[in-house]
Every structure is written in C-alpha cells, then in structure tokens.
Amino acid sequence: MRNWFTPIATRHRAWWFIAALYGVELLDELIYGLQGAILPYLKTDLALNYTEIGLLLTIPGLCGIVGEPFIGLLADTRHRRALVIGGIVATAIGLWLVGAGHSFWIILFAFCILYVASGAYVNLAQATLIDRDPARAEQTMARWTLLGSLGVTIAPLIVTALFYLGYGWRGLYLSLAGVAGIYTALLLRQRFDSHAGAEKRASPRQMFSDLLAALRNRELLRWVIVTELADLMLDKLLEVTGLYFHDVVGVDLGAASGAVAIFTIAGLLGSALLVPALEKVDGLRVLRVSAIIVLAAYVALLLAPNVWLKYALIALVSFSTSGWYPILRGRTYAVLPGQSGMIVAVTSLGNVSSVFVPLIVGRVADVFGLQWAMWLLALGPIALIVGLPKFEGRGMKDEG
Image (tube, rainbow, N blue to C red):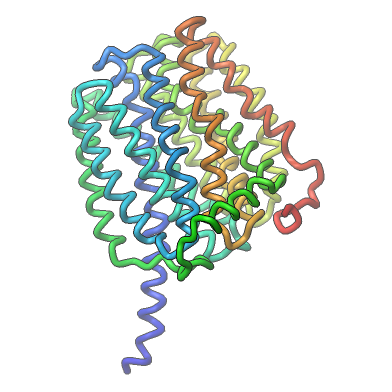
C-alpha cells in the first residue's frame, strides 16, 4: 500500500511546488501594484518632488543591479533554495519598513531591500519554472504573467476602495509584510533542484568565465536590450500613470488611482487571452502587430483632450502590451537552455540603462513638465518595431 500511494504523493508535491512558484509572482506583483497606486499619496504625505520620486525608483534598481548578477550566478548551483527563502524574508522586512517609515530616506532604504529581495525570490522562482519545461518557455511565461497581472490589478483596486473610504496606505504595507511572512513558511520545506547545477559547488572563477561567455552572445544581448526598452511601455508607464492623470490630466487622487486600476485590469484581460493564444499564434507576430498598435494609441493618449478618451486609450495600451514581457522573456531563456540562472544574471545587468529611466523622466518633468517627459516612453514600442528579428523562421530553437 505504501508503494501504491508513493506516486500519488509525489505528484501532489510536484503540483504544490509549481503552484507555490507561480504564487511568488502573484505576491510580488501585488506589492508592485500597491507601490504604483500609492505613489501620488506618498508624494503628498512626504512632500516629495519629481526628482525624489525618480530617486525612489532609480536607486533601488541600482542596488538590484549590484546584487542580482551574483544571485543569478549562484542560482545555477546548489544555493538556489537559500536565495529564494532569504529573498522572501527580506521582502517582509522591507514591507514593514515602508509601512512604518515617515521619511524619504527610510522609504528609500526599504525600497532598496524590496528590489534586491525581488531579484532573489521572484526571478529564481521564474527560472525554476522554466527549467522544469524549457520547450514551453513562452507558455510558462504567459501563465506567470497572468498571475502577475492579477496581483497588480488587485492592488490598485484595493487602494482605490480604501482611499475613497478614508483609510490610509501604510496599513496595506504592514498587512503585506504579514503575508510575506506566511509565504516564507509555505516555501520553507520546498526543494529547488530542477536546474542542471543543483548539486554544483560555487566556483567564482568558473562563474565569472561563464558570465563573460554569455555577455558575448549577440542573440542573447539583442533580446535583453529589446526587453529592457519594451519595459518603458510596461512597468515604467504603470509607475507614472497615476501621477500623469493627477498632475497633467487634472483628476483627483481617487480618480488617478482609478486610472492605475484601469491600466492593470486591461493588462489582466490581455494576459488571460494570451495564454490560449500562444498555443496557436506565433509570439513574434504578436509582438510586431501590437507594437504598431501601442505606438499609435500612446501618441493619441498624450494628445487627446478628453479625459474619458484618455482612460480608454490607457486601457488599449495596457491590453496590447500584455504579451510583450512573457514572449520576450521566453525568447531570452531559449537562447541558453538549462542556464536559467545565467539568464537572470545577464538580464539584471541589462537593467543598468533602464534603471535610470525614472530619474531621467523625473528630472525632465521637473524642468519641462510631466506632459513632455511622457513622450520619452514612446521609445518602448519603437524599439520593438526596429529590433525584432526580420524573419519568422528565426524561432526559439534557431536563435542561439
């Protein structure tokens, strides 16, 4: 009887592990969506200017760039589990500091913790899922992104509802700190050994040599660069949507949070449709068509005089970009199959350029106004139109 139940128990543990890995993205995007929704309130409560807002979104990214390459390289060894658990614990600490902090510097320090921690537990959970089925990287990323869209959608809806009821934002961060603590306990006994180097000892010289070899891979660099530029129309646009609708369009704070909610709901719908669509439609074709649509819709958004039309256009932009990250990241993983930790390391180095975007946008907004600064983000769809492979036949298996 014991032997008969063993395969069932094994399948149950495997299912639970996969569900837990996907749940990591749900938690992370819930945290990220909360940050974007409360940004106008944080700016008001702490009397921050646009440059300081840019610093809050730039310096933590720089900290992540310093830590994530080492995290990625160590992830291809036996240390992946310790990195994941340590990342979730650090996230709980960072969330508590945001909820309890009352100065710019404390919030900045807390954001730095959150960014570095996310590089450990989120990126490595994603990498572990890819390692379990490398041939279906795009489909795995589509499901991953769908759950992330769900989290980033729920967050501004909660913020909008609570603010209209007169509640503050600090309690939300303290609550999420408790959720992160619970999630630590859920993953504490899980094993992270599906990657090729699960029993490998860390050799600094070999890891550095492998990193240099990856950085010389032109196909890998192409996907990393295009993905980073595409992010201008993804996370970077989401981060300033609330500020744009409040400071430029002129809606009140509640309606500005509502714009963020519309953005995330549209992205959620697009992600839900993408999961079955990728079973029938080539990912590169989705990228090409959507990039043209997004460029036209975004230009219209910035020029449209009507507030309600702007709401509709921001929804169209978010819906149309929902496939960008999963397809681009899936293609990136496919360049070096079996080396998901190396992909994490190289893509984190690729953040060097995009991490300065919030500071640049903030500085341009302080000097010329946020309306003009928003035009910088149009480089996102332009990068896809220009940088994607020219031929459909250059698929995932042929691009290395």
